[in-house]
Image (cartoon, rainbow, N blue to C red; front, side, top):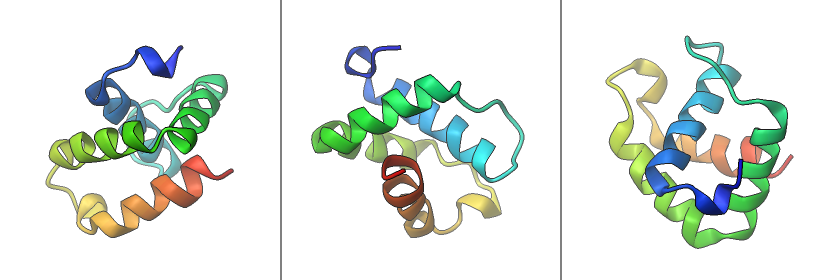
Length: 83
């Protein structure tokens, strides 16, 4: 996967898959190398991270796990991008 070739919507869908996997929710996570590539890309391209975050918020389902977007943004910035 080349994150630079992905649209914000595609990135948001991948982030959602990774988030769901990390939280033990249904769905498939990302392959470790894809997760690392996306995290590295978003960590060094703030504009892409902001665009993906904006789209992802629009995709949030009406589920309790998505009730507090600040918690999810924390996951994105600290648990997903930083490791």
